[in-house]
Image (cartoon, rainbow, N blue to C red):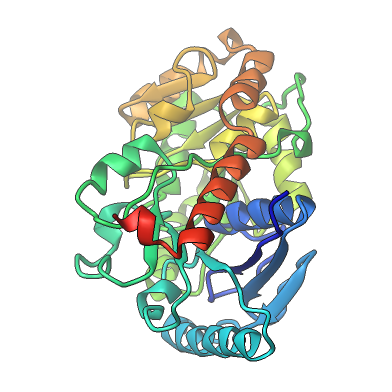
Length: 355
């Protein structure tokens, strides 16, 4: 029987981490850490103060206290992680590896000797070209579409597709009359396009999500959304809790995904389908992989096609939506693949994987 591993997970340092967190990367981390803890591994999560977690927690930094405070958060987090690794070594109980979902900490992780597994949650264009060369740092993508864009990165391991625990999302076959947009409110996620599509479809829209403390996010909200919210059939639901998100997803007629950037995955699409809710999405990145066009929703090329697809929602079977998630995107499959990578990295310290 294999020994249990000691795994340090690293969260995005901007805001406290909890089940109510808005970001997909945060929810992936929580789900994987919870599953590894259930399997008997020793797990810690490095995250900002105020995080609400079920397992062991290393408070790394004060969350953002003002707009555009990320660099201060990042520096505090990196220093706290280094201290935690040193302390674990000093008491003879070192971590076996670090699994970084932050997108930031690994860029200063070359000197600690531990293998770092970095899950890349963003398109390649969001990273500078010189950040993939560190010793003991290995990467994985979260979809085949994303992996195709990262060809040539020497330390790239196999893609591990995201998955969810469908049991946490109840199947609901009785739908309300509204369309839903749910996510991080920013320009690349483009909720204003969902508003345009809902107007064309002549259906009410619920816009639910969080505006992060970045000036360009807040400028986008003021420029593109604030005035429209006064005159259109849109209900704004700010910073919903996890249970509120589930209720919105379960009762929606359909979920709109309007990202203009290539989506590397889409947890919210999986969650909607698990609830039996169809997804209507612009064809960006991994979305055609996640959805079954015409069976669990519609992959479209424009706002006009999105509005037209909303009229064909009665053709989508909620049971087929949930079946897609159960067959393709289970948390167990995702966790099995990560656990395999953990064993390989921890036993070889990355040497065989890098060969």
